[in-house]
Length: 179
Image 1: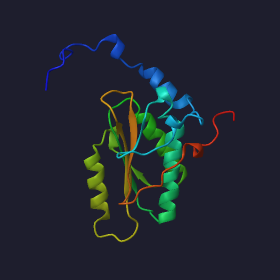
Image 2: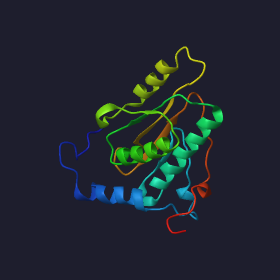
Image 3: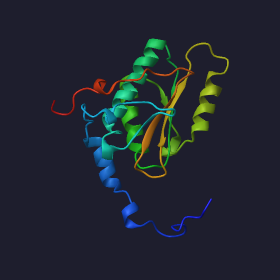
């Protein structure tokens, strides 16, 4: 693999992300119901997108997290939910959004102490250790982490106890502010 000519140098201005704008768009932008690119959709590792194109917003995380709560309730999953995050720009806001929904649904949620980050294997292992020998009150989990190597892309990965929440159509996100 060739070494990038940018290696060892500050990133050029045009490569930098405006983190204030990114977070503002996460909270304020509402997905366009007429744009199929802004659907809540899961790929091989989760929901992907960026607030800058309306594909990863607070509305997406609210909807996905509520769907997880509904799915857990329907399946009788009442053990704790383990949630991780990484160091990328929207991990903390997305985690806060998800925690609000989980708390409103009385889902016991376990996160890293001290607002720390948690690699996916740690979440997976914690779930396996908690569930070992149990036949009921099983734990599951989710994690917020990057799709790309920049702060632009985000994904929400869900690791339920060997089950997946159903895919939600974009039109299930609901009306936007003032609608």
